Length: 367
Length: 217
Ligand SMILES: [Zn+2]
Image 1 (cartoon, helix red, strand yellow):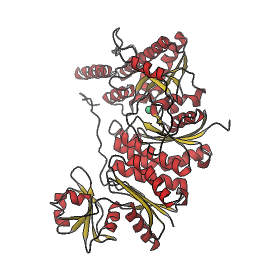
Image 2: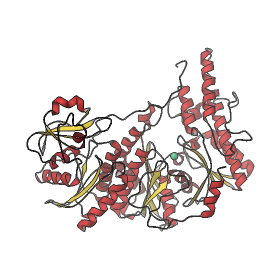
Image 3: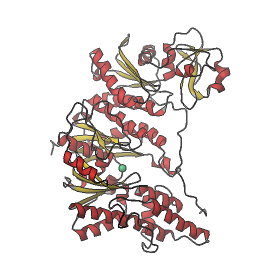
Image 4: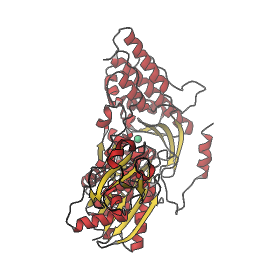
């Protein structure tokens, strides 16, 4: 439909410079410049390296997105940008670009939440988000279980990691196994040829008294590293494929078990999985099995939309326009710890849609 | 000609409009932690003061530093994006040159700004328009000889009186000076610098905590 909002989205919360363009739920362009190769030798994302790369890549990436979408900047209905959470210096580059672009073009600006964007991107794949939707977001930066009844105004945290993000654990185990960075894809590949039941690694926070929806991957990470070191110390060969498969199984077992449980407890019949780890093939298979058994519809966007990108920001921006949410002010700032409960950063001069019932419910989630 | 000049390489967030003859509006605020928030509203204010819209601008002038990176990038990214949206050229001017141009000094002098970590960004000048050395970053004690006895302007000079005995205003760069210098150079048919950041330091590469690998591959 031509009258659906045409929005350009900018994402710079980590190491990807992403510029996406959508019309409503239709993806028109998803341009990405990544500095991942520059970080590889450090074994993790170096914030200053990422920020410098964003500044270099921004204008060419915007140009590429416009060309790919075949639209003119003048026709845009709004500019959306990740306002947070993320790396402060990296976010600031994107926010500066988005503000200047929106101002120069005379378009409304929407500073949006990175996590809500990860959820909203699924609209580009599977159409309108069911309301409510349970979302499991897993990446190198986040591991969260979120419940949303309206992605533009109501995102409630059900649980989150209490230590490392799931993707971080993949990176660290890949490093211990000398498999390089980033760890997710390579562990997935080795795991396909290994036995997931070869070694029983611990499932964090799954005891009867543990918080039902929180995650912990630090103990698992240490257990796997110790297991590998013990083998090496004994002069034995490390069965890389079996270790990768068993470690991966421990992670995806906990993730899917808790996500399905949250759906059942809350009576939610849709689960979406997003974030870089959603590209993991075993997570997709196990989530599908468990959701089917529980009568839950699983929605996972294609891998390129799961990792950080500008299209997800544009998707949430388009939803903000469609639902008449207040635009952000010109003094919008990057907020590295923007709460997940703020899907966007509305300007001061406007009324903020607020649902007080949900405010109360949110507090009750933390005993 | 209508130049929009901006600089965020020092604690100042500074914006000015220059019509080719003189500065017609300007704004400077000093707040090292809020460059990102303050810059766009300042642009809006300066344009409103001149009764103009952004699309009347024929060129962007931006201070390229050297300066603390996070703030520096706000100005550069804003300038680059304005250039893209408006289809006008974006010119870079060394931030130290802007400070030099605003200095009220006869004869050779030094410009020094605060580089944090007990260092200064600095360069030597023959006069307000002529820089003699490439911008550099050093500890003040290390450049005692190079700058000895010379008058010095900028916050870096005011911060280290042991090295810069004759420190003077201005403390921070103004976009008005930057715009005037750029207008003068453009009128003389000179090429300005590309809008690329002068970081002068390599990025801090914080290698994440590593597991001790007992047996290497
Ligand atoms: Zn992400």
